[in-house]
Length: 185
Image 1 (spheres, rainbow, N blue to C red):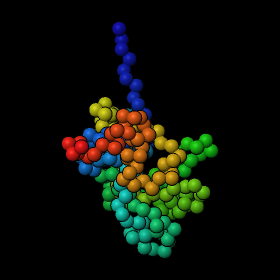
Image 2 (cartoon, rainbow, N blue to C red):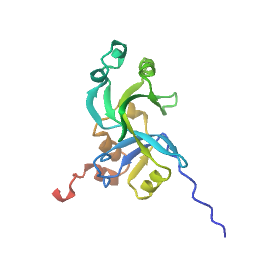
Image 3 (cartoon, rainbow, N blue to C red):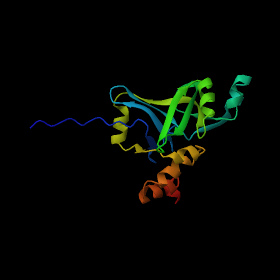
Image 4 (cartoon, one colour):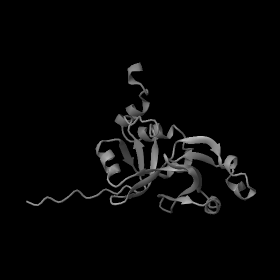
């Protein structure tokens, strides 16, 4: 009997919530928007909840960037941290989250003039080789979930991880509220 191969999963546009067991420091309690995901090419994403404490105005002081000066900068991942890029988030008429990433400052300014758009600045991004993310998902290192329009109302700070985790199930709520060191409980 010929068994059919596993069909490749496609998670582009979904959120990856780091499992509490993923404590490597960099991805600890991360929420990643998966911006690209193809089994043959790998995956790319942006960590949404690691603000650097800096704003665009602190890095780009030219008056042509004045409209972006107060936008917080987030650490998008360990790859390409020397580059500052922008992303825009909005919802369509059906309330589905839409986004465009790695856009220029000029495009970010254009998007910022659209009602309801959220603009974020990122240094770096997250990346997986072909098959790597799938392997991590099999090991349950990530919890995939669909984003909602509520993501636009969030500041995207460290508490985004626990807020999203609490909304998945009662079990995940327990994980979200557990101390970092369970032996201190």
